[in-house]
Length: 196
Image (tube, rainbow, N blue to C red; front, side, top):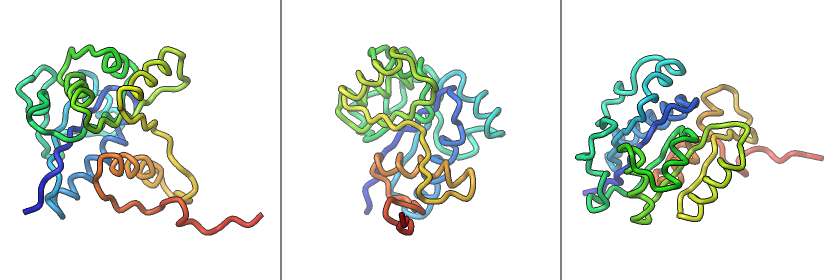
């Protein structure tokens, strides 16, 4: 029997819901084809409205268990439950600041706090521009605590042909950090050599 990697996907109200949607699509495919991943979803209070604005529909269409903002009975609210990784996609600067300073005022920030204290994988995908020194210092605090800061910065060396290709260049990096194999179409070195 294959052991399952238990992953929490946190979604905040920052712009960038298409990254979260694509991540959930790829995780759903992984669950369906391999069954080696278990996924739970945790939303901030503003995530559903931003999701509707940027993606249409409802995040619950993925049939992953979605936990309420204050539902601390969620298994990943405790380190003893053994959830191995979390990605917060996208991550608002408000959520990032609360996590950086140990303010566990929602299930999402509590889950991130658990990942840090248990030394488990926490991938934070910040979405803001430009960045203030406060944002940068909060990110540095999280990096020192062991979090992986993975800004939503698409790559272009794979010659993207669509918006989905650009989104995938970020999502495939998130999956790699979570320890989930992906069907990444383009990796560095796959593109033809550029002649000078």
